[in-house]
Length: 235
Ligand SMILES: [Zn+2]
Image (tube, rainbow, N blue to C red; front, side):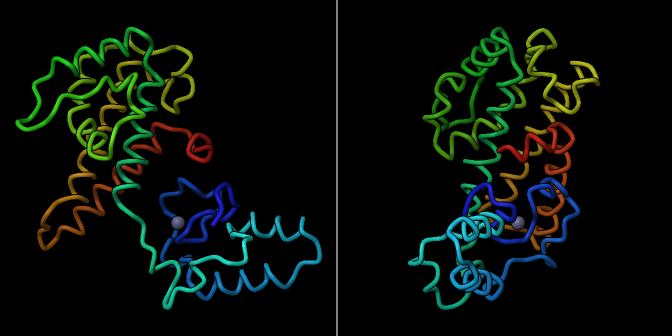
């Protein structure tokens, strides 16, 4: 699979312009083994020129290398290689939320966040955080998860003076006033924390899947409320 493809998702046929459409029917538009096999067959047989082959590969998110190890899987190259929740939720969405939040803070906002975090009482057994403003790149999966859990409380220490004028313009909700922007960002963090808790729980109640579905949907709506679709596509 290739990044930046028109149909770049490993599991469904969503197009770039449909990314962020919360109503997109993933079940009806799933990407199945036989569909990809057919596309790969066309990729290797239908094209006279390298350029045309490359265009087709990039439209459908296919690898042009001929010896792809996923071709040898017995069952289904999509179902057999499931998404890894730790990468998706912690290393990806949580990290992007943290980075995007820091991106709307000005210098004094960053300082305030780092100070408030370093003074915060943490749950027993937790080690202190490295300064996330300067050391986010050295964070592990669990650090992202832990930071999102306490981050909303840290963000409560910030006020309108800590937001950057220019960065705010990139947010969809920038017209709704700074206190409101901060409130919506904090809501992203609390829903992100709830989603992580629901997805990484060591046990699940009988209706756990419904709870998980509900909180993931709320998180998706909230993120779409704050970010422009364009920003999501550019990730
Ligand atoms: Zn998909």
